[in-house]
Amino acid sequence: MRTDTEIKDAGFSALNTKLDNLEVERFIALVNRQKFDYTEWRKTLFEDMTIDEISARANEYTRKQFSEE
Image (cartoon, rainbow, N blue to C red; front, side):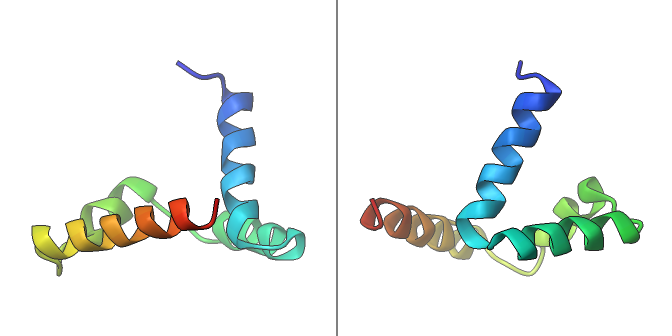
């Protein structure tokens, strides 16, 4: 299991792949301001999608990741 520091580092790294430094700071501020329940959010994230749609999006995401390397 990873330490809290390792998880924070991985999270910042993930954010930095899509956002610039200012946007990362804004994202963190937005999350901290709101009462945000990640577990509840995840329960409803894909509720309007079929398994095939979720799979297609995951495959497309993977293709994009490997094409950028």
